[in-house]
Image (cartoon, rainbow, N blue to C red; front, side, top):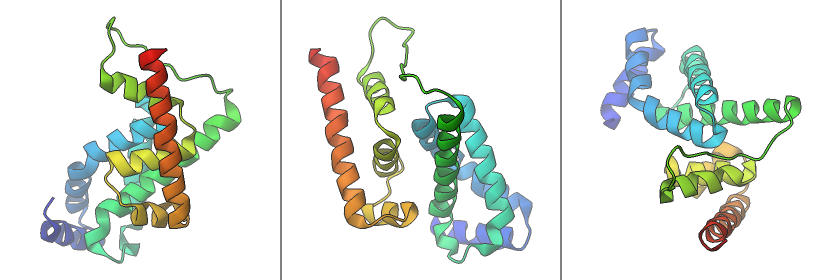
Length: 173
């Protein structure tokens, strides 16, 4: 979405224009949903997360100070909700190994990456999703996660290494 259009829509939404807010959400819905799915690994949970993020954003739109940062603000809301959902799930459900079962006999590279990504601990998977799928910079991730830049860099490097090892095991194992 063009920044000037986004700023205009956010200003309208802050004044209570629900149609402007709906337009904003529709423009970012697919990327937010995809990122939520990559964090939560479940379509139903990703849908719930997206819906909850949009409701929370609508309730708090007036607190957004920088209209040009709506997309990263909405993404931060979604990421926080997704992390909260993961925490709740871990408290109440005994976690099993994630296995993505493909209906096809052959898995594609994308399926292998998705499967391997699902096996990573949450702290690394979330950083990788934010960096590679959402396109956030290390600085933006640091601000969003409220972690020092060096912590984000370390988790990104460790996550990459773990993902590479998982993919190599899959290829040669």
